[in-house]
Amino acid sequence: MILTTTNNIEGHKIENYLGIVTGVSSNLKRSFSFKTERNMELIADVINKAKEEAFQQLRDNAIKLKANAVVGITLDLESESGAYFFVSITGTAVKVV
Image 1 (cartoon, rainbow, N blue to C red):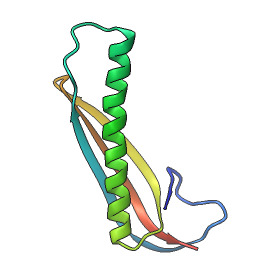
Image 2: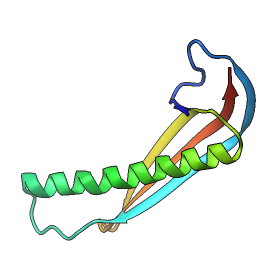
Image 3: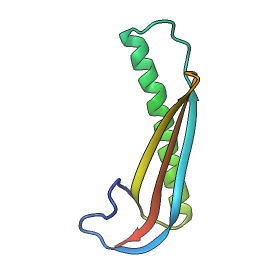
Image 4: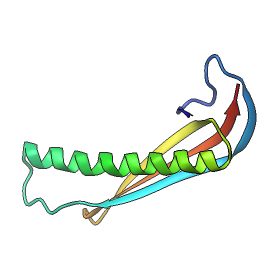
């Protein structure tokens, strides 16, 4: 599965546009009373875990459409009340040759 933020893939021709696919994930941030290097690493881990879960959902949804690539990927990261991280990834599922 090719995943890209660009609208085309060098060396490949888009044969068919199959639809918009998304992946969404949210993770609870642990409570950190002050900023330390270790706490910042833990926050980064929480964000990365949410991002990877969202990318996996995006891939799974693209596979359901029989896609072998997703183009035009955008990622949105938001925090709600400083307690949750929400990651939303959207792209266009395509068949490339």
